[in-house]
Length: 215
Figure 1 (tube, rainbow, N blue to C red):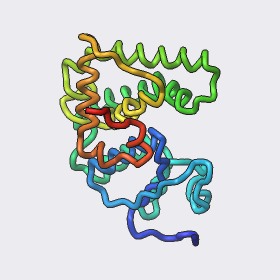
Figure 2: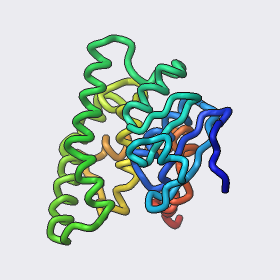
Figure 3: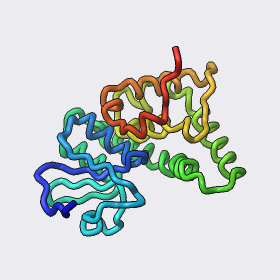
Figure 4: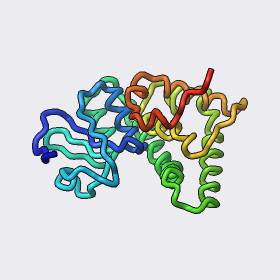
């Protein structure tokens, strides 16, 4: 396959299993952006990426002359480039709060998610991380009884970060039990997973992460 030097449309180099790629695919689907998604193997990254991205990493987003290679930057860029529907609140205080929630998701949960999905740590460490992530999610479950989305009445970029993590709970060996406390969290998960943009964002590999339960 020859190296493509110029593309007419937006191009997204995506890892079909990565929750960082998945969050951007959700934003693209939410905005209805026409995009050329190139599913790429992180162990065998396309040659042209080396010329575009100094870190030679996934995901990478190309929009004409612009090259972005950090998922949060991509999400905010897409929200500004395609304003409808807006995925960050209008007012600065609420926008700041949403960005802070994303920072905390990355700091508190993504580190655990990355380790659990990689599966390279000792079983003792992995079990400790599973317990920490499970208990942390259960602890925040009641907030979803107040508002349908993450601290918001509307679907935002925070939810775009949460949905891929929650979708991957089974492959991380985490089950959220149905209790009075967890019911709002489980309802939130259903709300996210049934969303049209979420379904459109799923790669085949991601669909396989949750096999349908028999009737």
